[in-house]
Length: 134
Ligand SMILES: Nc1ncnc2c1ncn2[C@@H]1O[C@H](COP(=O)(O)OP(=O)(O)O)[C@@H](O)[C@H]1O
Ligand SMILES: [Mg+2]
Image 1 (cartoon, rainbow, N blue to C red):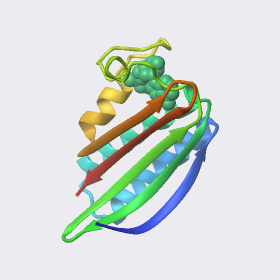
Image 2: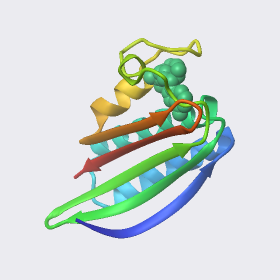
Image 3: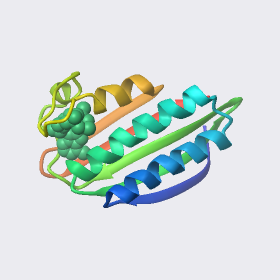
């Protein structure tokens, strides 16, 4: 698997969340994603960017263009140095929220992605990576 291009975008405001959506859309289009797959990536990116802002206290996303033989993909890695998540299994359950949201962000992002990983330590922060392949 080769990383063809990478870009770091900070997430410290709702304007940055909009920017993340735009960048995810642009990269998905550049990789030849169908409209449905573009929307899946952008929706997941939006949820994770908002979590980074609201729960992580801000952070960043690394956007990578991937090439794996004939497959083309986009990987998004969100990271923050916020409070972290104590119970990951619980946080990934549909409907679980500590912030009065719908509790569908993490679980939805996982369903909308081909690869999903989450790494979080209480007091140290959270990193969530998703990959969508064409
Ligand atoms: N980056 C993060 N840092 C700390 N906690 C997080 C982070 N992302 C998600 N969480 C926790 O996981 C819960 C579930 O997130 P999510 O599924 O997006 O639902 P919602 O955003 O509606 O609360 C959040 O309520 C929060 O407690
Ligand atoms: Mg959320």
